[in-house]
Length: 307
Image (cartoon, rainbow, N blue to C red):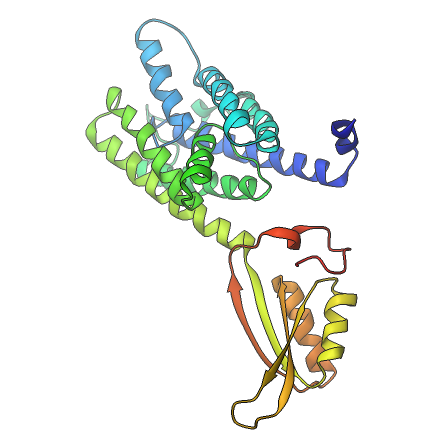
């Protein structure tokens, strides 16, 4: 009953749409930039290219998309056992649609139509293929990690490393990726493997960059005699929580109140506009916060939701 009730929520359909679009974009990156060039960046897609190539060399006509589905199915069991049901259920969906979405991209625009004169690179250069793939994949990973989902495959291994060894997601992606990337020695020359390792390292850096940008918040500290007006605006108009602290001026010795709150960039701009438009005298400092946990992420309609 609880699962059926969740199907009727706005949050479920919002996240379902995000996961679908994220995987549609990720599938394009794999299909157009990774598979033709046979670059094995540290990912399950890269491992699937190795396995698929070895199977084809043995006379078995197995598509890379099929290998992806099989490997992801195995890793999904690990996601349920080691990470949790929510992550596992979401990853079931994203992992199993990667292969079919690659086939869909092939029907929309076949890779062969983009390759000319026997080239194996859509962009005409392996480094450009690598950069395009890493940027597309990293953006998809960061968006899905934010809603406690993943693109499957490598992300499952990275999430396990993140949970049990407490590394940042970018570092976790790099560690898991390097291990997988080394399997490319079975089919690729040394130079291509090095390119893949560099792409894996770059992938980890960009995931951290995108993740920090998506989770970025402002820690705002406002000292003012009109603190009550500011507090009411934050709580009643913006619907964010705040904390009040009594402070004493080191020079004047006067007592005042400080209002502290965690706000998005738009909310911070709104507070600044309110203070400016109402000519409120205040001393304001603000700094970036890249990670926020706890009640802050609950529905904004809760009046006090960051404590």
